[in-house]
Length: 90
Image 1 (cartoon, rainbow, N blue to C red):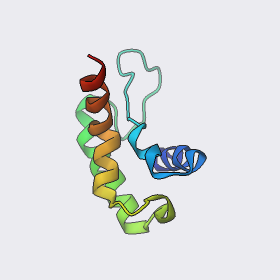
Image 2 (tube, rainbow, N blue to C red):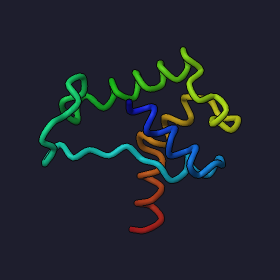
Image 3 (tube, rainbow, N blue to C red):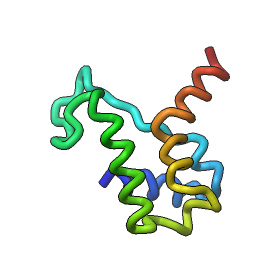
């Protein structure tokens, strides 16, 4: 479900720049129902691993990779884009 949501957003933008605006966030301080496999922020490394593994194994949404590799895409949404935003704006 997470990968599906990510790739739907990329598809709606329709170009590689979509990968530069997405970021995984948490609301662990206020989330009522979490994803069972990722119950807290300590689970984010596992989410990262699982997303990358799924995308690589299934070649999921390959037409929306825009020449990038899954590791690069996952790095962008798991940390790179958020850090870039903070660097540019704060």
